[in-house]
Image 1 (cartoon, rainbow, N blue to C red):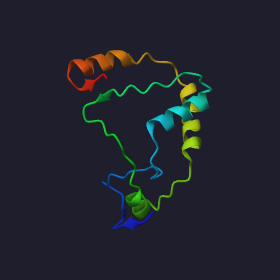
Image 2: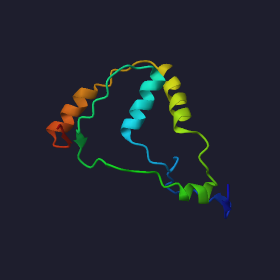
Image 3: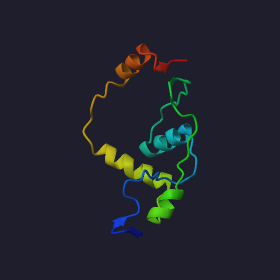
Image 4: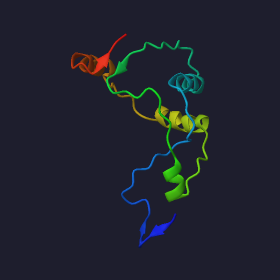
Length: 112
């Protein structure tokens, strides 16, 4: 890591980390299905929250410059490790549907 006046060059910086390769939500969902061995059907509803970003790819140039960062873990490997961690966690009722209803009532979520 490069040093700058006794502190790291990244101090106070906002830095994107990722592969720099775009991956669709459906690709992520299909990968998760494979990892978990799920036979669930995927249903793309078209629902969205106001302000959601339709397409986004991490720009890793700053991470490369300041941290000498180079992605070294594939999406498959990273998701597999994450899913293994998730399976070791206690189940929590996140009240997901309730949160969507609250967002919908406030005008911040649109069901198609």
